[in-house]
Length: 407
Image (cartoon, helix red, strand yellow):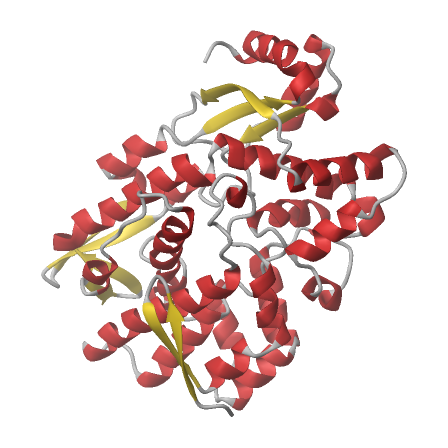
């Protein structure tokens, strides 16, 4: 087993890895994450957004390690639990497909699987699990921490949840590489204000401002980056291309080995190699448009009048209705919904809750939608947009306004 490495990271400084962590990072299944961008369309608006799931995974492991160390100093976690948390955090995104959340929407429709399902399979059915077992960590335990399963809830919340290491890495990382000024968070204050109550991760009420500030940063990044209208324009045509190409490329129908061969470059290359007309031809054209930044324009946007959001709207139905009313072919119309699975931060996140603690005594579970700041922001993140190609914009805009109402 290899020893110790210090990796220089622009967000956290030095990220230390050792033992099984180094072994896992060296595996092809993990190295594949170098070829999957964290944000699939953001680089077409923010050229610096070239960062990948690889460095994000290292960062989440690092932050989870800080959280585990702090809770260990308080006698809550033992060394073995801390190691398992670092390993599960390192592997929490190993199941992501090409173009991250974007491919997940295609994959869910084709197979019903999520990236968490694929991550569990990768841990339990490949050499990733062998490395874990050889290091004394049960692969099913690590998979359970990473993707949900038996065990203390607080441990899973460290990996992914309202107070997770995941959030405390991707926000500053996405902010750093996009250049957005909205992602500054006081992660040190949050980490040093953590506790455990029952089986839940808890936060000292004195750090509530830091938590709310982090939630505000998420909102700002949602508006400025994750659901930026041009970023999503690139993503909706790429999503359309992958769905149209399913019959030719079989992106969602292969086995685990096939899945592990899927990267951003591999899928884009496959799309560009398609021949003929019909769906393959349209898929190739959309891939070329994505590659060359020839994007549809947003002609309609509105905040959906549904308090708290109740789910994804029937975008296909709206698209068809706009097509019929405008006389424009559906292939020139795109309808986007902020509740779609391909959007990293849909408003449904507000359904989580946080345990707030007063000096280690009185504890109250607070649903996030009951926090005034979070509730106010969530009302402005449930958004519906309509896009159109250059020759169809006026007709589509008129039809969208007629069907969906004035903005």
